[in-house]
Structures are given as structure tokens and as C-alpha cells.
Image 1 (cartoon, rainbow over the protein chains, first blue to last red):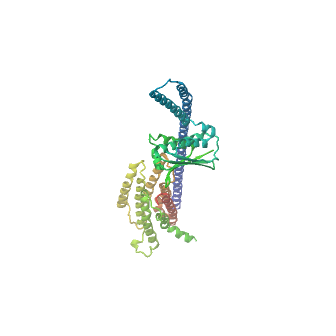
Image 2 (image 1 turned 135 degrees about the horizontal axis):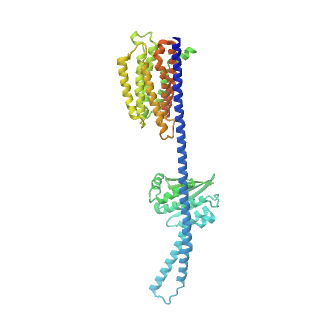
Image 3 (image 1 turned 120 degrees about the horizontal axis):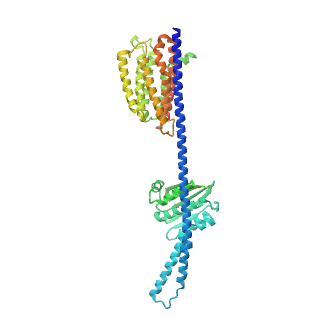
Amino acid sequence: MNQGSTDIRLLLVVGIAAMLMLFISLLLIFIFTQRKKLQFQNELQAMQNAQKNQLIEAAVRSEEIERHRIAEELHDEVGAILGASSLHFNSVRIEDPDESNQSIYQKGKDLLDEGINKIRGLSHSLHSNILQEFGLNEALSHFCGKISHESVVEISVTLDPSYPTQVGQNDISIYRIVQELINNINKHAKATKIFVRSIYLNKTLMITLTHNGKGLTQSHFEELRFKKDGLGLKNIQNRIILLKADLKFSHHAGGYAIDISVPVD
Amino acid sequence: MFKVFQIVIDWSEVWALLIPISLLLFRKQPALLKPVVFYVCIALFINLAIDLTWKIRTILPAKYNSNNYLYNLHSIIRFFLFSTFFIRLKQPFLTTIKKIIPFCFLAFVIINFCFYENFFDYWKLSSRLLSVEAILLLFYTLQYYLFKINDSPEVNIFNSDFWIVTGLGIYVTINFFIFLLYNELTIRMEHFAISLWNAHNISYVIFNLFIAKGFYESREH
């Protein structure tokens, strides 16, 4: 009887111990494999994000190189040809021109001058020498000054002078973002007043654009940037990702605002 | 001191259930966990009846002072509610087998208690019923882990169903051999059997702690 009792007790203890060990082993294997898979998935995600950022960076850089090339070609080739054409045109002497010839001559001269100005403007728009030579604040002030017109749209600029004038790679992207946003405001929002403000604090540049037109809300922006014809917004988004910046659209009583926050190394 | 400890352990089948039930007052549980919610509520009443019957057995008439049928009832209800829980997880793994098992268990219960054992046996609970229930629930638990090992990982490994399944796994792993040999032990070593039931009660407390953790991890408020 005692032997039987001992046997049952032993069977019980061994059985419970074996079952528990098996269960705990399975549990540990489960937890370990799940963690490993999760770690692998996170690493894969990080690699995909890094690759995506590299592609964006390559796209943005090649866009800048192309803009620079086109700007140079326009200025050096087309600009020079038009300039020479204008000189030749001005050298033409017509003896006693009648009224109609005089007006045609004047029209041709005006068109040529307009063409030269447009080429110059386009060249500067594609590649700002002011940005390279004088820094972001100067480039933005100059751009806003060019766009601003009393009877169409008034642009006020208040930029933090403590932002360094040495041009970093990021300044070009920041300039393009502000340029694109102001062009969009002019084209679509029909604003009459635009305010551009910047604050440089704790290695972060915060630029705020406010206007009194019909702007975008954050949800509207997120909807539009995935549309094919919203290419400008997609470019802005790509540059924002590249800069690791933050972009927010908002609407308040006074009008619409766009806040850009860029970390600066 | 030992007497107090013994009373606490004796009543653990009742107060252990209050741990997950108290969380139900603060957190609404998702539909997925409804079978477990039903289990803790029904089990509270059954276990209360079990412990009260045992404690006042000297007062009750002879016909009614056995609580063994209540253990049988608890086992059947626990099996069906937890098998429903596993089926509702909708894991695409052994789905047909998981759906067939409750019917097989039902057939086993009917045949066992019609021909082999008495459901209302005065002297003993059904070791066979409880051990079959334990092994089937262990099967459900193991298939849950096996599926998860092969499946793509979730951001949160330790979600509510993980805790509940782990608690159930620990409970049935510890108690399978206890249930299997319990009738034999009550015959040969009655005192040891009574002491061994403390191990069951402690594992039941652990089980309910895991259920409470599962309720806590569910995100609905």
C-alpha cells in the first residue's frame, strides 16, 4: 500500500513538473520568437524608411542641380542671345518712319525687353544667387519684395536676424518651400495680405506664413498632396521629410496660417 | 496563523474570481472576451455554492450536502465558454478541429454520465471529466501559441488574449495530473488529496490573476 501511495505521489509530482516545464518552455519559445520577428520587422521598416528618405534626397538634389543648369542656360545662352538681339534692334535706324512702322518697331522693342526681363526673372527664380551669396533671410526678403505689389498682394516680412547667413544644404529646401507656398497662396488663395515671420530658437527655425485669403486646413492638405495635380504640395512634403521638419496648416479667426518648424544642426 | 491561511485558501475559489470581476466594473470588455466575462460571473456563483455546501454540510440534509456535482457542472461550463473564446479568436489554424471538439466533448459527457459515471455522485467528483476537460483546454492553449509563433508578430505581444490563454495554460498544466489521479488519491490517501486541493486552489488564484490582467489590457473603457 505504502509503495502504491509513494508511486502515485511520485507520478503526480513528476507529471506536474514535466507538464509545467514543457508549458514554460513553449511559452519562452513563443515570447522569444515573437520578439525576434518584431525586431526584424522594425529593422526592415527602418531600412525602408531610410531608403525612401535617400530617394527623396536624391530627387530633391537632382531637381536643384537641374534648376541650376536650366537657370545658367537661360541666363548665359538665351539671355545673352536676347541681349544681343536687343542691341542690334536698338541700332536699327529707320529714316522717316511712318506711324505704322514706328508703332511696330516700338512694339518689337517692348516685346524684346519684356522677354529679356522674363528670362532674367525665370533664371533667378530657378536658382537664387542671393541665397548663395547673402543667405536665407536676404533671399526670402528679396523674393517677397519682388512678388509684393501694393494693388495686388502686400507681403510683410519679419525675419529673425540671429539665423546664420552661412548657407547650408537645408537653406535651399527651406527657400523652395516658402517660395512654393507663397506662389500657391497667390495662385489659389487670392490673398491680399501675406505675413512672413521667422524665429530662430534652440537650434530650430520656425517660419510662419499667415494670409487673409482662402487657405488650406491640415486635413485638406493631406488629401491634396496625394493627388497627381497637387505636385507642388508633394514636393513641399518631400522637402519637409528631407529636412525632418514639421508642417502644419491651420485656420483661425484672422485667416489661415502655415507653420514650418525646421531643426537646424 | 495556519488556520487563517487555510481558511483563505479554502475560500480562494470564490475570492479569486472577485479579482477579474472587480475590473469589469471599470472596463467594458470587447466582444472577443465576452465568453471569459460570462465564465467569471457564472463561476463565482457555482464556486460560492461549492464552498458554502462544503462549509455547511453538517447542517444541510444528506441529499444536498455533496458539492461534487457542482465541480462537474463548473468543468462543463468552463470548457464550453473557453472553447467559444478560442473559436472567436478566429485564428486560421485547425479551425475545423477546434469547432468539432466541443461536440465531441458533449458526446463524451452524455455517454460518460449515461453509462459509466453518475453526474450527481455523492462521494466523488468526476476525475475523468475534469482531466478530459483539462487536456482539451491544453490543446486549445498549445495551438494558440503554435499559430502565433508562425504568424506575423503584433506590435504588442502581451495583449489581453495572451494573458488569458497563458493563465488557462498554467491552470490546466498544473491540474491535469491532479484531476487525473484525484479519485485514486481520495481512496488511498485522503489527507494528501485534501492538501493537494490547496495546490489546485493556488493555481486557480494564479489563473484569475492572469484573467484580470487580460481584462486590464483590453483597450475599451
